[in-house]
Length: 241
Ligand code: SAH
Image (tube, rainbow, N blue to C red):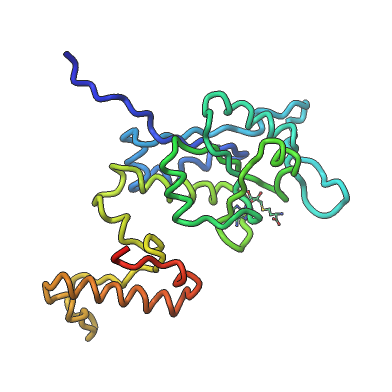
Protein backbone atom coordinates (compact mmCIF):
# COMPACT_ATOMS: atom_id res chain seq x y z
CA UNK A 1 0.00 0.00 0.00
CA UNK A 2 1.18 3.48 -0.74
CA UNK A 3 0.09 6.52 1.16
CA UNK A 4 0.78 8.83 -1.78
CA UNK A 5 -1.69 11.70 -1.92
CA UNK A 6 -3.39 12.39 -5.23
CA UNK A 7 -0.85 14.60 -6.95
CA UNK A 8 -2.48 17.96 -7.65
CA UNK A 9 -0.79 19.99 -10.33
CA UNK A 10 0.55 23.29 -9.04
CA UNK A 11 -1.24 26.47 -10.11
CA UNK A 12 0.73 27.63 -13.13
CA UNK A 13 1.54 31.08 -14.49
CA UNK A 14 3.00 31.32 -17.99
CA UNK A 15 4.27 34.76 -19.00
CA UNK A 16 4.97 35.73 -22.60
CA UNK A 17 7.50 38.55 -22.51
CA UNK A 18 10.41 40.24 -24.24
CA UNK A 19 12.16 40.43 -20.84
CA UNK A 20 12.37 36.93 -19.38
CA UNK A 21 15.24 38.01 -17.11
CA UNK A 22 12.83 40.15 -15.08
CA UNK A 23 11.30 36.92 -13.70
CA UNK A 24 10.81 35.64 -11.08
CA UNK A 25 12.13 38.93 -9.63
CA UNK A 26 9.99 39.86 -6.64
CA UNK A 27 7.94 36.67 -7.12
CA UNK A 28 11.00 34.70 -6.00
CA UNK A 29 10.93 36.35 -2.54
CA UNK A 30 8.80 36.20 0.59
CA UNK A 31 5.41 34.43 0.48
CA UNK A 32 5.25 33.97 -3.29
CA UNK A 33 8.89 32.84 -3.42
CA UNK A 34 8.39 30.26 -0.70
CA UNK A 35 5.27 28.98 -2.44
CA UNK A 36 7.28 28.67 -5.66
CA UNK A 37 10.03 26.71 -3.87
CA UNK A 38 7.42 24.51 -2.19
CA UNK A 39 5.85 23.69 -5.57
CA UNK A 40 2.47 25.22 -4.68
CA UNK A 41 2.64 27.19 -7.88
CA UNK A 42 4.94 27.22 -10.89
CA UNK A 43 6.20 29.87 -13.27
CA UNK A 44 7.19 29.59 -16.89
CA UNK A 45 8.44 32.43 -19.04
CA UNK A 46 8.38 32.42 -22.82
CA UNK A 47 10.61 34.70 -24.87
CA UNK A 48 8.41 36.31 -27.52
CA UNK A 49 11.51 37.13 -29.57
CA UNK A 50 12.10 33.42 -30.05
CA UNK A 51 9.08 33.45 -32.39
CA UNK A 52 10.37 36.16 -34.72
CA UNK A 53 10.78 34.79 -38.20
CA UNK A 54 12.97 37.31 -40.03
CA UNK A 55 16.73 37.43 -39.88
CA UNK A 56 16.74 40.53 -37.64
CA UNK A 57 14.47 38.73 -35.15
CA UNK A 58 12.16 41.74 -35.16
CA UNK A 59 9.10 41.64 -32.94
CA UNK A 60 7.75 45.14 -33.64
CA UNK A 61 7.12 47.51 -36.50
CA UNK A 62 5.86 51.03 -37.17
CA UNK A 63 2.10 51.63 -36.82
CA UNK A 64 -0.09 51.78 -39.92
CA UNK A 65 -1.65 55.24 -40.07
CA UNK A 66 1.44 56.83 -38.58
CA UNK A 67 2.06 58.13 -35.11
CA UNK A 68 4.71 57.60 -32.50
CA UNK A 69 6.22 54.36 -31.26
CA UNK A 70 6.23 50.78 -32.41
CA UNK A 71 3.63 47.99 -32.36
CA UNK A 72 4.22 44.34 -31.51
CA UNK A 73 3.60 42.21 -34.58
CA UNK A 74 0.52 39.98 -34.75
CA UNK A 75 2.35 37.07 -36.39
CA UNK A 76 5.10 36.95 -33.76
CA UNK A 77 2.76 37.33 -30.77
CA UNK A 78 0.35 34.79 -32.26
CA UNK A 79 3.12 32.22 -32.65
CA UNK A 80 4.22 32.78 -29.05
CA UNK A 81 0.64 32.31 -27.81
CA UNK A 82 0.15 29.29 -30.04
CA UNK A 83 3.19 27.58 -28.57
CA UNK A 84 1.50 27.55 -25.16
CA UNK A 85 -2.05 26.55 -26.02
CA UNK A 86 -1.66 22.78 -26.12
CA UNK A 87 0.16 22.56 -22.82
CA UNK A 88 -2.20 24.94 -21.01
CA UNK A 89 -5.61 23.99 -22.37
CA UNK A 90 -8.46 25.94 -20.83
CA UNK A 91 -6.21 28.49 -19.12
CA UNK A 92 -7.44 32.10 -19.30
CA UNK A 93 -5.36 34.13 -21.75
CA UNK A 94 -4.84 37.66 -20.47
CA UNK A 95 -3.13 40.70 -21.99
CA UNK A 96 -2.07 43.22 -19.35
CA UNK A 97 -3.20 46.53 -20.78
CA UNK A 98 -4.36 49.95 -19.61
CA UNK A 99 -7.42 49.45 -21.85
CA UNK A 100 -8.46 46.36 -19.94
CA UNK A 101 -11.06 45.93 -17.24
CA UNK A 102 -9.49 47.09 -13.96
CA UNK A 103 -8.37 44.13 -11.84
CA UNK A 104 -10.46 43.41 -8.74
CA UNK A 105 -10.06 41.04 -5.80
CA UNK A 106 -13.17 39.23 -7.08
CA UNK A 107 -11.48 38.51 -10.42
CA UNK A 108 -8.30 37.46 -8.60
CA UNK A 109 -10.34 34.91 -6.60
CA UNK A 110 -11.86 33.55 -9.81
CA UNK A 111 -8.46 33.28 -11.49
CA UNK A 112 -6.82 31.52 -8.56
CA UNK A 113 -9.59 28.94 -8.43
CA UNK A 114 -8.65 27.83 -11.97
CA UNK A 115 -5.58 25.90 -13.14
CA UNK A 116 -3.46 28.99 -13.85
CA UNK A 117 -2.96 31.76 -16.40
CA UNK A 118 -1.25 32.63 -19.64
CA UNK A 119 -0.20 36.29 -19.50
CA UNK A 120 0.91 38.46 -22.38
CA UNK A 121 3.16 41.37 -21.41
CA UNK A 122 3.18 44.21 -23.91
CA UNK A 123 5.94 46.66 -24.70
CA UNK A 124 6.19 49.73 -26.97
CA UNK A 125 2.71 51.05 -27.92
CA UNK A 126 1.17 47.64 -27.38
CA UNK A 127 0.09 44.71 -29.56
CA UNK A 128 -1.47 44.57 -33.06
CA UNK A 129 -5.22 44.49 -32.44
CA UNK A 130 -5.81 41.57 -34.81
CA UNK A 131 -4.07 39.01 -32.64
CA UNK A 132 -6.06 40.13 -29.59
CA UNK A 133 -9.28 39.58 -31.57
CA UNK A 134 -8.21 36.33 -33.23
CA UNK A 135 -7.13 34.76 -29.94
CA UNK A 136 -10.05 36.23 -28.00
CA UNK A 137 -7.67 37.70 -25.44
CA UNK A 138 -9.05 39.18 -22.20
CA UNK A 139 -7.52 42.56 -21.35
CA UNK A 140 -6.85 43.36 -17.70
CA UNK A 141 -5.58 46.67 -16.34
CA UNK A 142 -3.83 47.45 -13.07
CA UNK A 143 -5.39 50.89 -13.00
CA UNK A 144 -5.78 54.18 -14.81
CA UNK A 145 -2.10 54.88 -15.44
CA UNK A 146 0.42 53.77 -18.04
CA UNK A 147 3.39 51.52 -17.31
CA UNK A 148 6.28 51.08 -19.72
CA UNK A 149 5.62 47.35 -20.05
CA UNK A 150 3.32 44.56 -18.97
CA UNK A 151 5.88 42.66 -16.88
CA UNK A 152 5.33 44.51 -13.61
CA UNK A 153 1.57 44.28 -14.17
CA UNK A 154 1.89 40.52 -14.79
CA UNK A 155 3.91 40.15 -11.58
CA UNK A 156 1.29 42.10 -9.63
CA UNK A 157 -1.50 39.90 -10.96
CA UNK A 158 0.43 36.70 -10.23
CA UNK A 159 1.31 37.91 -6.74
CA UNK A 160 -2.32 38.73 -5.96
CA UNK A 161 -3.29 35.21 -7.07
CA UNK A 162 -0.58 33.08 -5.49
CA UNK A 163 -0.91 34.59 -2.01
CA UNK A 164 -4.44 33.13 -1.96
CA UNK A 165 -3.32 29.59 -2.80
CA UNK A 166 -3.73 27.20 0.13
CA UNK A 167 -0.42 26.92 1.98
CA UNK A 168 1.08 30.23 0.80
CA UNK A 169 -0.21 32.60 3.45
CA UNK A 170 0.61 31.87 7.08
CA UNK A 171 -2.81 32.07 8.68
CA UNK A 172 -5.73 30.43 6.93
CA UNK A 173 -7.95 33.35 7.83
CA UNK A 174 -5.75 36.23 6.88
CA UNK A 175 -7.27 36.45 3.38
CA UNK A 176 -10.89 36.70 4.46
CA UNK A 177 -10.63 39.88 6.55
CA UNK A 178 -8.74 41.99 4.07
CA UNK A 179 -9.56 45.06 2.05
CA UNK A 180 -12.16 44.40 -0.69
CA UNK A 181 -13.16 40.97 0.61
CA UNK A 182 -16.38 42.33 2.09
CA UNK A 183 -16.60 45.26 -0.30
CA UNK A 184 -14.89 47.44 2.30
CA UNK A 185 -11.38 48.69 2.94
CA UNK A 186 -9.72 47.14 5.95
CA UNK A 187 -9.91 48.47 9.53
CA UNK A 188 -6.71 49.96 11.08
CA UNK A 189 -4.10 47.73 12.74
CA UNK A 190 -2.05 48.29 15.90
CA UNK A 191 0.73 46.37 17.61
CA UNK A 192 3.21 46.90 20.47
CA UNK A 193 4.21 49.24 21.99
CA UNK A 194 0.89 50.12 23.60
CA UNK A 195 1.87 53.76 23.77
CA UNK A 196 4.00 55.31 21.03
CA UNK A 197 5.01 58.99 21.00
CA UNK A 198 2.06 59.76 23.25
CA UNK A 199 -0.44 57.89 21.04
CA UNK A 200 -2.44 55.13 22.70
CA UNK A 201 -3.89 52.05 21.03
CA UNK A 202 -7.73 52.27 20.89
CA UNK A 203 -9.00 51.05 24.28
CA UNK A 204 -11.51 48.58 22.81
CA UNK A 205 -8.70 46.49 21.29
CA UNK A 206 -7.31 45.88 24.79
CA UNK A 207 -10.69 44.96 26.26
CA UNK A 208 -10.61 41.26 25.34
CA UNK A 209 -14.30 41.60 24.35
CA UNK A 210 -14.37 39.95 20.93
CA UNK A 211 -17.90 41.07 20.12
CA UNK A 212 -17.04 44.70 20.80
CA UNK A 213 -13.79 44.41 18.87
CA UNK A 214 -15.57 42.97 15.86
CA UNK A 215 -18.18 45.74 15.91
CA UNK A 216 -15.50 48.43 16.27
CA UNK A 217 -13.50 47.02 13.35
CA UNK A 218 -16.61 46.87 11.17
CA UNK A 219 -17.49 50.49 12.02
CA UNK A 220 -13.93 51.63 11.29
CA UNK A 221 -13.89 49.74 7.98
CA UNK A 222 -17.14 51.49 7.02
CA UNK A 223 -15.87 54.90 8.12
CA UNK A 224 -12.64 54.58 6.13
CA UNK A 225 -14.40 53.20 3.05
CA UNK A 226 -17.03 55.99 3.08
CA UNK A 227 -14.29 58.57 3.37
CA UNK A 228 -11.84 57.17 0.79
CA UNK A 229 -13.83 54.98 -1.58
CA UNK A 230 -17.55 55.77 -1.42
CA UNK A 231 -17.89 53.90 -4.74
CA UNK A 232 -17.24 50.63 -2.89
CA UNK A 233 -19.95 51.16 -0.27
CA UNK A 234 -22.83 50.18 -2.53
CA UNK A 235 -21.45 46.68 -2.98
CA UNK A 236 -20.43 46.08 0.63
CA UNK A 237 -21.59 42.88 2.33
CA UNK A 238 -23.30 42.98 5.74
CA UNK A 239 -21.69 40.80 8.39
CA UNK A 240 -24.88 38.70 8.67
CA UNK A 241 -24.94 38.00 4.90
N1 SAH B 1 -0.12 52.74 -25.98
C1 SAH B 1 -0.75 52.05 -24.89
C2 SAH B 1 0.19 51.92 -23.69
C3 SAH B 1 1.36 51.02 -23.93
S1 SAH B 1 2.34 50.80 -22.51
C4 SAH B 1 -2.02 52.80 -24.48
O1 SAH B 1 -2.02 54.02 -24.55
O2 SAH B 1 -3.00 52.16 -24.08
C5 SAH B 1 3.21 49.33 -22.89
C6 SAH B 1 2.68 48.07 -22.25
O3 SAH B 1 2.65 48.21 -20.85
C7 SAH B 1 1.27 47.67 -22.64
O4 SAH B 1 1.25 46.95 -23.83
C8 SAH B 1 0.82 46.85 -21.45
O5 SAH B 1 1.19 45.48 -21.60
C9 SAH B 1 1.59 47.45 -20.28
N2 SAH B 1 0.78 48.36 -19.44
C10 SAH B 1 0.85 49.69 -19.39
N3 SAH B 1 -0.02 50.22 -18.52
C11 SAH B 1 -0.67 49.19 -17.96
C12 SAH B 1 -1.71 49.08 -16.99
N4 SAH B 1 -2.26 50.16 -16.41
N5 SAH B 1 -2.14 47.86 -16.66
C13 SAH B 1 -1.62 46.76 -17.25
N6 SAH B 1 -0.64 46.79 -18.17
C14 SAH B 1 -0.17 47.99 -18.55
